[in-house]
Figure 1 (tube, rainbow, N blue to C red):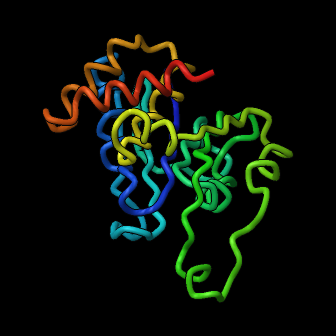
Figure 2 (cartoon, rainbow, N blue to C red):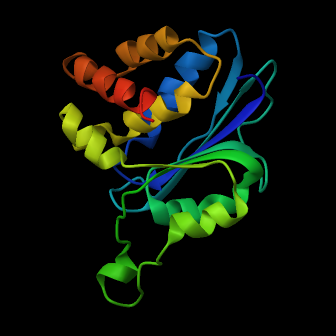
Length: 191
């Protein structure tokens, strides 16, 4: 997984920062240069959030432009639709099937778009839809959605599973390590 541009998109409270820290740890421990952006968007629960991670031989900037992301890791469907233009056409687009209503939908001023994943699949052939919320719940916490999604993404890389697990062990709070490893493995082994 060299010279790779990854965008992590979701809403506040879904763990985009933890995800970027895990990816940074994995990159460094795989001998790569890595740059991680600050979170752009509302860090409060419910606001749109995007984080950029670039890793490779020599990375100069974490910023990812439109049609540049190799991997778009989407923690929520509407956020996938909002940021899809940043993915290359052959990018790996990993989408959590979860829907979180934004404020305009909650207040009745807008409707949540239908068939988002199907629409994205029309233009992007490498879409993986993941029931990450359900999988995280089975692992012990709905807060582990991000780690389930990391597991799905990790499976498609050339980076050893042990490096990913070590990153989780060194990044999450000690009391949540076992549950997060279980969530990672659920994603990694998902068919």
